[in-house]
Length: 110
Image (cartoon, rainbow, N blue to C red; front, top):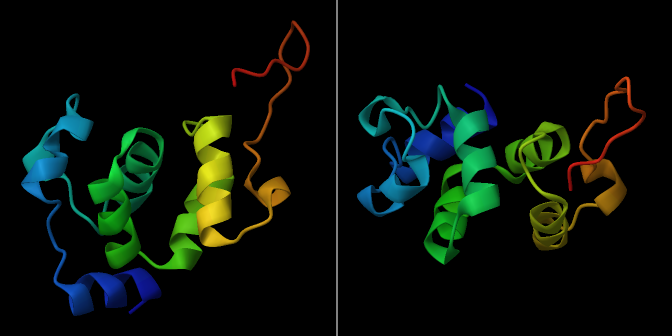
């Protein structure tokens, strides 16, 4: 059992609270599993969430998993990335989204 499974089972957060449904407007909310879709849930709530979403993330997932998602997700803006890096006490450089070369040079969407 990995750390996420321990957090999920020990905190009894097997479902996303109904109050967070608006953040998942474009997917089947009932089909979201806290364990199976952790990367998507964490990325979405880090970028669009409110204070309740923050509390849910901190209670449900390990700091390691939050940090890994923060450092690899390309859907989190620079502003949100800086906030979460500060909150999780992670060096901001390690939270930079990966950049891929384009025919037009190195493009930043932040």
